[in-house]
Image 1 (tube, helix red, strand yellow):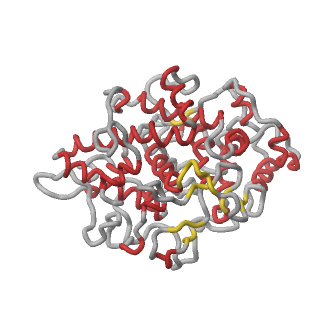
Image 2 (tube, one colour):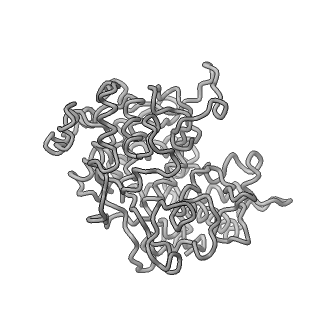
Image 3 (cartoon, rainbow, N blue to C red):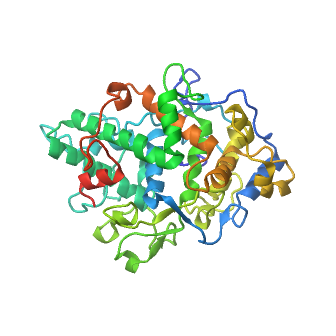
Length: 454
């Protein structure tokens, strides 16, 4: 249920029609859907996203995106889990984004780390009187998340234990929080502000510029947002959550090296047979399975593994997700098919229509000619997610997002920071980080080092 699978009604009971907590919406509410929701269109989307189809990266050739180390792929996943959680929508029926409840807050506040606070989520914190303010760890497994007797992670968002790398990222943030308390003598509230502000700084000044280009970030900070606006509080646009921010699926490599000893130092597949060495989560992480972060980020001259180029191909294992039963057309195990079908249920516009609404030159039909054989004109009215991936490939050589995708992601990120009255951008826009090893700067490597996990 964590990724929009069909859910049982007694797991997520129906809400009263007067219960209004929807925090999704649209950037371009007047644009029509890219195509009507018909059986023929669904079959065409299933063909595009099928295993062995045009999106299936059957080999490892030309994988590397030297602009983004592989750790950035999973940092993007961690950030996504901080912003959105939609366990209730279906792949079979249309939904109104404004009626979908977001089980996360659309601000960079790390509720996936802190839960609802020490009083409402006490299982996330060390017990004591007076309270230490530290997050819970397991001394017997210092590299792992805290777990219960059945190895279920005790964290604020279960998705942060779905693979080894994002699990280790969450563990690093726990250690970062605790290190702030030890180094600063801070209480819980003071430590949370320090952690959140350094995290927000890293997202705004490192992660986002590397993803969309620094010139896009600078333009929005100095000239303002043009498309992402709200009346009362920030919301999550479906053009962002269903299309633009799913660029990370294209970045995933089929296998990664964890450290010099696990699996004899060889690469480990992202999915494997039950009981085999793979990157799946929801299991204990001992010292042998702990990440060597030098394989994932540039640390003290290390050469990390890199993310895959951003384009319209995905690693082959993503077309057979092991946690979804096979051979169910209404609930496909191909991640590409799932993403494309969501364009129908959320009535997303075409990439070309969004580009024109943003006063940008859209991709030409020759750049989308592989869709022409479908006979539905998708080379002229392209699903927004596919369009954004192809745009990154054709307009940015796969190194960053292109003009449409980059602008959507950057405006939503910056808009959420500007809409959060507790963010450093609202509270103290001239604030500079104090915990990094570079004066006034802070990045993911600084966080890992301060947390003591490098």
